[in-house]
Length: 179
Image 1 (cartoon, rainbow, N blue to C red):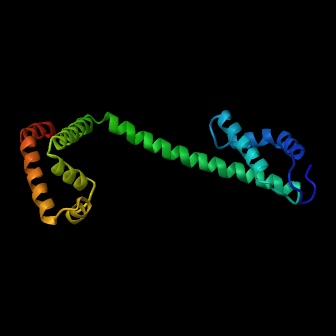
Image 2 (cartoon, rainbow, N blue to C red):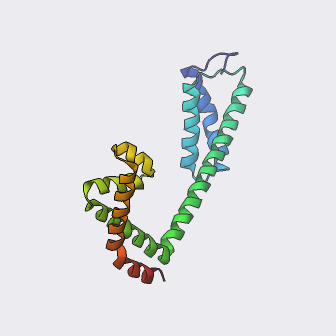
Image 3 (cartoon, rainbow, N blue to C red):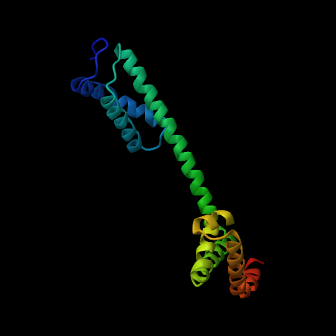
């Protein structure tokens, strides 16, 4: 099958595949649930064997490599599936929580209204608030817009006052929805 320290060629790979494929799938099936998943995993190993230009001193080394690779890939699949299951469980829990659902709707609605309110601000105030929401400090905003720091502070303060007035009616609604 494998000559001493030679690269695996196409003929060798076909022979190795025919000799070990079934056994490797059965071995993988000890760890994974579906035969399709096991077959895909073993096929990927053979593709990798072909792409990597591996050399093996003898057939025993090849056999050890194949079985260890199957075991390691099965372990990775199991870990990945565990993470997916935990994520899915968390999502299901979030979807089943009606209070959280209402809170998320409320948050989305508030954010939508906030951005709508920002859009109707005068241009310079709108720019300052948007930069502030991106996390820029007043000094960075002043430098970015090439205006004085005090101008940024003043326009920001005026913008917040306008926004607070627009959201004043919303505060009582929020209170009743969250109680």
